[in-house]
Image (cartoon, rainbow, N blue to C red; front, side, top):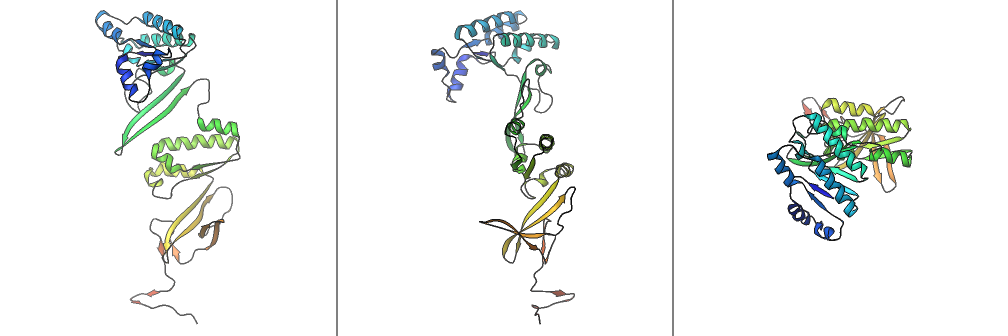
Length: 316
């Protein structure tokens, strides 16, 4: 059952059809029914307060008539614009939620928000009355439109999709590839909060985690320095893998930046990857600042002295 407070059923049928949803066919089959409250809203604006008793009675009648299991109220905030007292808004919202719960239906109540990231709801009471709260955002950032979904509240169930998988599968190792992908769809603060929460879940179960991120360009420069340091401080072991150009070839270097609680190799070594896997080679020589943005590579065939250049060296 779909209760509409703003759009008419005719408009909703037409808009849904453009998305491939055959509402008219579902109505003919007795699987869908409208409760049109849009006219009631317009009438209440001229004669006084909105009559919730009449709405509740209509909802109950249609639910029993078609055996509805799901009820959507879109958007119920239009009702509460008639009331200036927040106490009344909370009371009436609780009454509607209690009615739907008593009917044994799954209900979705949509509402608007005053701002994308300032508070959860328009009136500040909706999230306390309802069992579940889901926020949909459509934000323009750096000339890119980003749509996100956030589960703020899910009463009576664990709503962390990853937390539940860890509890059910009970892994010994977990890999997230990559943090760079998460950085593209989340703010630095949200990414840090995610990693802190993830660490709490994994450490409790003694799970070894490997988290990868694209080197340099994608992740760290996009973060504020303090946030980047905080993310690095969460890891027990940090391994850097860097590609660089040397002798007309793309080569790779690997280094252990930190290994908390244990001694570790301090040198930067060459690493190769082939069909048999990854191979750690000898210590890199003739190079410096290899982990910096602009590595300095020295050609062993040439040396220079102050004021003049020398040709290739010859070894006796």
